[in-house]
Length: 543
Image (cartoon, rainbow, N blue to C red; front, side, top):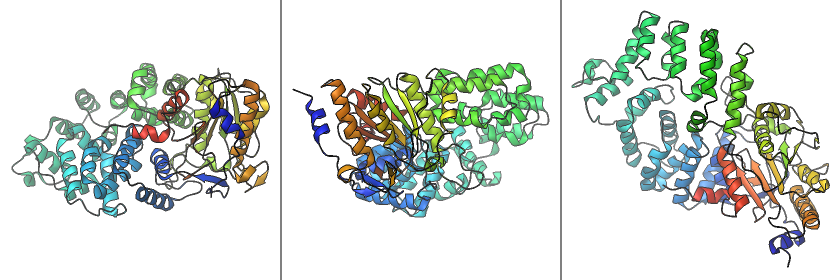
């Protein structure tokens, strides 16, 4: 007998589309848990090509109301922070738990609220009243107090960077009772209160790191500052305003964490750090340190962003180190069970910033198409017999060498297209290739609205163009392969927080959202079995 799963899929009529996407094209609605997981893995509450921040917030609140499972919300908050590495979305999910389940709120608070930036974001969201709670009274206040009294000195001092709300606002509203005079003096210093008001604490009770930071800022010479940096652990942006010359900036560079180092290469160059050849070698070595890259949880696209943004004067050795770092950061890409067609959406909507529009001066220069190109390039590198197809309303069938570096491939791919969107085109190419393929991977924002040149048109049986072409592809593959196992799979990687998809979930179709390494983990599990789907990956999180 033939493979029953495969035989059923190739004889069934494509399912009718149930909705219209934001671009007006036919689509399928995600079920609420899946849609919420998509938001938790991609949402940043900033304007995308088709939806502004207010619309995203309204959709998120609606989805949370539809998901009557607080344990799932708690696990999703942890997934969003620890696996998708987002900041605002996990804070929003924790804020919703503050009113829905105070006990779960307390249980996940420490896992999700792991730094001062996320703590201040949570306060902002609670005070807004958008998720039920409007004040820090009760359970939220106790959680904030516990965090403020247990956080390390370095974490608290780092939390003082930023405002609206500031750490001073957090302390004023949370009103923690200091556990000892050292913490009492630290709270007084962080809120700029006069030392006389710290009683019974005094300046002598300040933690050593705070006293060293104050001494650094007051130091009269670069030599004194360099000496203090031997024992001072503080974020570089707490030191920058008072740093006295290149020697101090070299010492600061050595103290920078991996992310700060990657993000501030131009700053270090302006302050003369790379005039020292030894520092060029030292910084390059740190940028491509395998253990540090994996430990710091940086996205591959962040190295692409650094590479695109460094000035022309940055030494080539450092640029090459960014290439190597991107290769290492892509190391979690799965090897597929056979060659696939990788469809890269290069349409106009993919020009939207990957983290949304945040206003002049703060919007990321990294576009969805840049991230998609990097994902596609990484998949090709790991699966070199595959076919890579950029597309908008036409498929760009050119040869791409898997031996090229990740960043070189991504930079080239991101320059394609810019028109409308027809997500069925890569599947058409796969269908016409007459090759035995393991399937198709689409990297897109799922906003397809054209099918075979007809805008806003449905496919066969009222389906999407993707499903029409996918069913035809399966029939062709059945003729080529017979009942070989595994059967072809369609993997749709969605980079934006929308609620629709071009292909519904079923045994041969996976929809996964996000742009972290966790996406590749879900894909790998899906290809090995049917237990690694997106929602299942969230449900597998432990509290």
